[in-house]
Length: 597
Image (cartoon, rainbow, N blue to C red; front, side):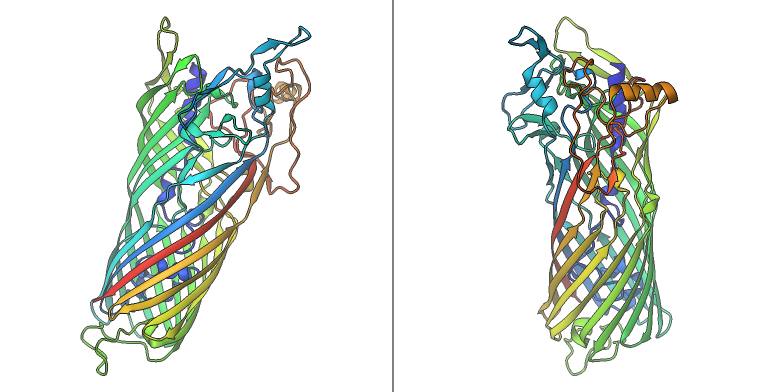
């Protein structure tokens, strides 16, 4: 029981909870807002609508009059993992009998792991149903995403020729969350049998809510220099489900489901920018974004007995998490834009100096330019995200309830008093994003066509690739329309497809039980490269044949992500959980409505 609780403690630590809705390269896709999506993200130097609050607050003094913006981004994230290996890997000592519930409400499926039967020749052999499980190759698992549009709402006002202000709820263009498999992470394999999800130790299900109010100011010092500052207050609430295995390994009967509920009610951030206009047709912007580290608090519900036929399903609720610490990436952006202008850059607030020949004309890039082109380069300091630390409150217990009514429920300490915290490895890397885009006004003042492309390099060590976030190399193709549908109402419709690199993380070097034992005797430790300890054909621990996969033709790295446990028994090495091929892409649709007052 105590070993099971240690595994449960570690389940909490496999999460990247608050980051899911936080601004960061790798977490976000390029295209925050409809116009940014249409132009491949190249909008830092194009001050056109209230999204300058996020991209370039100095641009507030480029906007005329008052504007109110409502944007909605809908991202469809196609993500799948093709795990490498067999279900038999990691069933130490043959495993324990298990029972897999049907997420569609059908009959559960029994897995008689470690059990034997008498063969036709009178010899004792492993139960054939168990052998089918041991030898079954791991099945592909795909994300069932939460289809939730991401809104942007903002209001701006050019108070005077020199001063502009803005307020908004600016949500990041975050990677969608969702569920990997059905309830409890159960899937139906390609042979029709129920199986525990091969990626369940990296995550089962997640859902996050966040609110990000922004207050921004922009000031024009002279004809050439503008500066701005946007202040943000981030609020995060997350519900994340994940699995942990008792004392390591993949025996389903030892799995525990953890539901983490964590909140951070104050994550300050700011964006500051300098906007230079060396020539009326040229805009140059430098911007920097800082976000404070996350320090969330909350609690965890632990559910035992899900796959164990000897235990009832039982949840121990509201065990406190005192701290979940996560370093957040920062951003440094530069943008340069050239515009073929019809008219000089406008002056005034847009209210007290109307166009005398046409008072209803709005002087902005759609009206005053034939076309423009912009190049942005963004350096994302994602390398700050190397690990995550979870701390627990001591003195709590988790309860196990046997199915045998003659046995009393057992409670035991959570977590182990000697291990009050856990470190989860992330190993992100800094990224560079290059964005090129522009707009051609087919009908100036009425219709503009935008297009763009962007590239972002890989932002993770492939050895630690996981299902929570995909900071992989990507290329995006973008396009959209800007239409003035009424005298003071603009409509933007944009679409992008983002091609993401496929990452293959090979399974670690295979080692037999004897080899691992020898390594432990000599060094006292086991390197985290083992994958198949105990996977012997006869399942009795006496054979020598093992299950070895066909190595991939090309791999980007060798898996290193350990199953997060408070400790493993001395006879077992850490189990590696992330070998496989990670495939993904985005399709994104955005619609924006901007009203000029």
